[in-house]
Length: 234
Image (tube, rainbow, N blue to C red; front, side, top):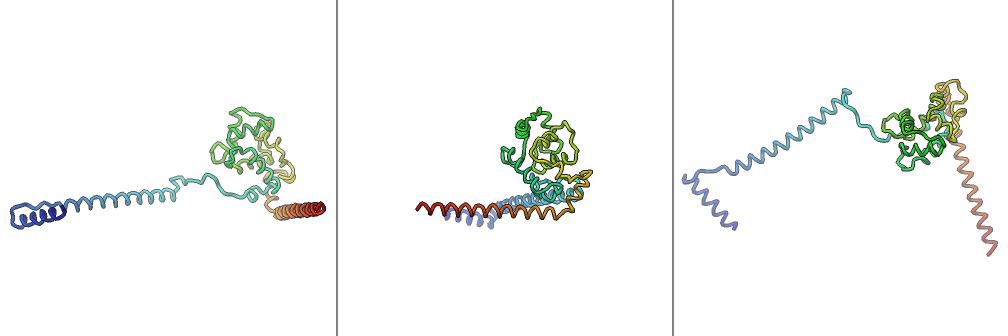
């Protein structure tokens, strides 16, 4: 098969050289086709690069919107300095308790169950308004940071007495009325005190470390006592 094709090509070339057959630019057409495909690919790449450069220019000029990550990493102890570490840990424990889906958010249904547990059920519209009041990223659910904002507003006296968020804050077991604002005349004054009071923060960490050490020592003592009691029955 290959030898027949080669013989046909040689015969055709002889005919072309003799002038008995007109040449056909088959190879040239194929080459042009390949060139066109390559040019098309290059044009697409240039177009994509141009679009990316245009997008970057729009972002630099403030025309486009940056895509924000769904969950922002932050430190609640540094952002919410008006609260003690113990208070924030208690709020976190409460948040995780009602975050039934364990996705790091409290949605409408989970908030509904929370308010029912606190014996303060809300209407569907009331629940939506509760979320809306602290929903800074407009995703219609509460992150832990937004949950902390509820207690910040409660401590600052920024919530209406009959609002759902005020009921939530007041019926929880977390008291922010005294320690949170430290008896200051205003929330902003309290925040200044909290920011400047680094010794309090260090003292809380020290107390936590001492509590953990104490728990570990008690565990060792119980373990030793159990071994001693066990050896007495041998």
